[in-house]
Length: 213
Ligand SMILES: Nc1nc2c(ncn2[C@@H]2O[C@H](COP(=O)(O)OP(=O)(O)OP(=O)(O)O)[C@@H](O)[C@H]2O)c(=O)[nH]1
Ligand SMILES: [Mg+2]
Image 1 (cartoon, rainbow, N blue to C red):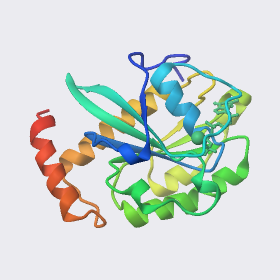
Image 2: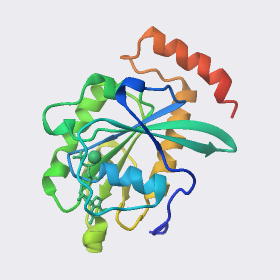
Image 3: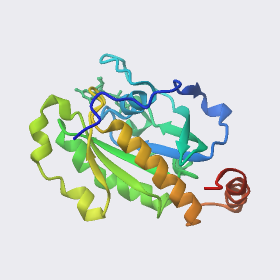
């Protein structure tokens, strides 16, 4: 499995509020049922830290991270839903302009796996083509779960990883893969139909400045 206990290193993600959304080069969203471990996964990636009893948060959290992609700086915003998903579907702005998605379920709660279908459907309504990585979180609870087959990823043609925010298994790999896939998506110029002209222009403008890969 590899990568146990590793974190991305570097600075802790800067937290900002929804009113103050700075544009980053890349937007990566986290999706999945409440309490599957989305926040813990981001935290794990950004700081290699883990607080087992932290309560779930109730507002959107945006973590900015400076990634290195083939020697180039790429500013990434990780969007963490933090609770809204308990009440209804996500606000479209959550999906808007996203370049990649990490879709998570919790191996200890079957319902979170069942609900992947709804998450995926909703995501594709807004972002038809963005790369999605499927992750099965909390494998530390019982590693035997990694011998089980989870057909959803295969069915949808998604890359799939077993992860643990608790011990760090595969967390760095998944986030780095998501960043790389997001950069490739952006460079590939595949525009999802929900994008408006403004975002298209911004992307074109930025691409020149940032992605001389
Ligand atoms: N054993 C174990 N527990 C985990 C892991 N990841 C998260 N948890 C626990 O699961 C609970 C939920 O984690 P969160 O990261 O808050 O989940 P979330 O998906 O962000 O939940 P919402 O913010 O409500 O949407 C917390 O009690 C975490 O400590 C893991 O890898 N292993
Ligand atoms: Mg959360």
